Length: 68
Image 1 (tube, one colour):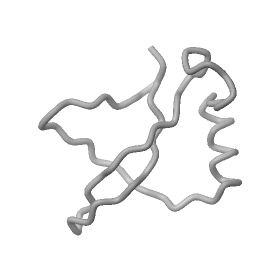
Image 2 (tube, one colour):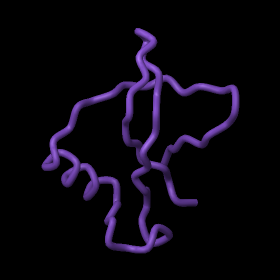
Image 3 (cartoon, helix red, strand yellow):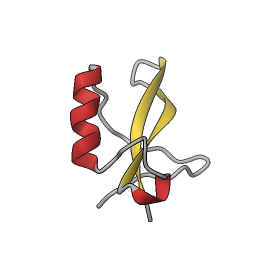
């Protein structure tokens, strides 16, 4: 299991994908995320984030955060 945590002044490199609602549903299932469950009952929770692209653009995205 891997995850990210916010830490002021640090960065995480990654890849972004444009997903359809169907893609999200499949990925949610794979990651053990169900928005109808209490957050502590999921393996990961999906969280909205803002990120900076390599082109310097600010994008709204979502990521999965592991439940400890």
